[in-house]
Length: 137
Image (cartoon, rainbow, N blue to C red):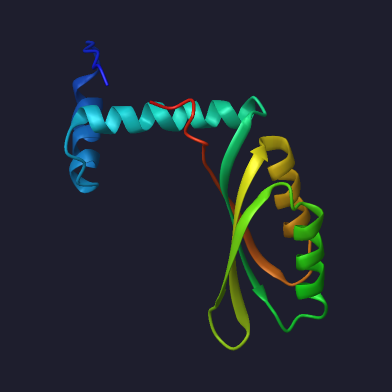
């Protein structure tokens, strides 16, 4: 992959703070840190444009809650075209963690997330918005 060098002029206090953050995160170089920020902005744009994206929906729920497992399964079957895979983890006697890998139009994935969040018994629902990687360097 060919590299492009470019120059950026920034406030020295901002650069010092950024360098401190790079050190905390143990990133090897400023270039790596800036590239990561650029890719994050591009992924955000992919989601805003309702393009084809990928990500993960993370749920925590009480599996004892009346009918939650059936309703969760039904919602996932209704969105089978978005779901790549799921992983189910027993956190303790009552609580489960479900990770749902998704791929499709961002608007549809966000709709699935809203539907899952609305289910009674879901304690936490979050989206890790990602990319298919096709538009990222």
